[in-house]
Length: 140
Image (tube, rainbow, N blue to C red; front, top):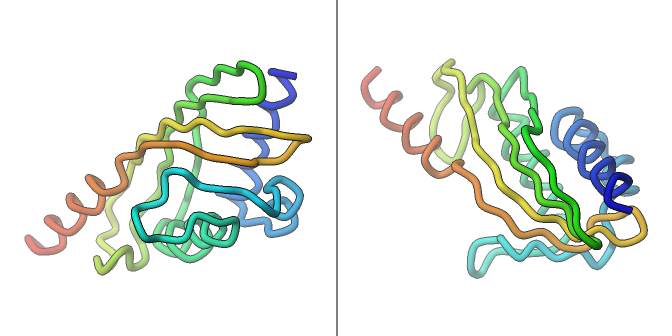
């Protein structure tokens, strides 16, 4: 089960985050998915997860890539340490494109049930990246 759950996470990262494949998202994310890492007051459902990648990251970053550095599986959970990279070529959270390379560090845990994401917990460095981009755009 551990290796097959790791494969689900790898598939999600490549097909959903990088490629923006909505059919893969539909296949890999349960209808009752919950994102336990959503900011207070923000939606925690399946569509808000899609929105994170489809409306936030992919439009802001060209050459988007995900490099999985480490995965550990236990029971129905997979912990992944990864790096999301790209070039800031579109607006991101109020910051106009800077053309700078970005590197977002991510640690997440996903609960996989019957081959689908059921729940997510995670931390990432996106806020720090946005602050750096904002500072760079103000200097320009």
